[in-house]
Length: 115
Length: 117
Image 1: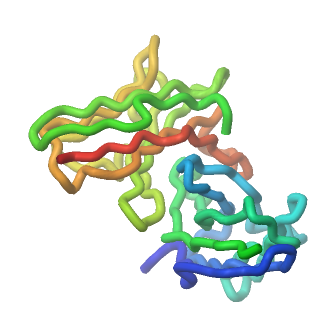
Image 2: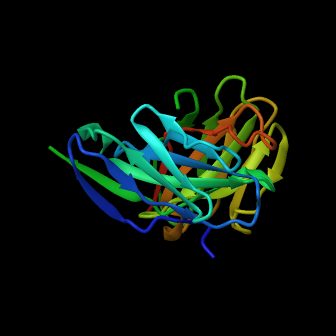
């Protein structure tokens, strides 16, 4: 089974609107961490936000928030007030308590922000 | 992101040649990871190294691929006798510590794009 599933290959959003990028995960480990990365066309991987499995509150970092629904095993990324510079690939990733040294990545969602 | 240095950024090799990708971790980081990104896919773990030790190479292909992180100098990912299927982006990442730090991200370099012709 896939550890991380991102079901939206591509998304469009109007500038200044909010957008939600979906991510579901699969693990039996009670301890895990969930991450989102942004990969612009230049190729680098930029860390955006982290959510721990024991965190009671949803993580937020500026315009990014993570909608963590543990029972559903989902960790959707919400970007508020989209900007043109948000156009990029977005990857959801997970690391498990049994092996924190290995990240599992989803296949990504390509976000296009329209002016 | 700044600080993990990878080179070359782009590398073209003919089938059968060798490719060497180098990675210098961020200052103060002693843990290095290599990931591979095939076209239109997410990153896949290859290997995790500390200085002079391979800790986890469960994601490395059994043949032609090797990695090292010597006491001095950068980490090297070496691909011998490259084939077209090796064409991918190879990302190096580093962290100050490894296991046990669940909340710590790893910091990626800008990637090395290998094209095999």
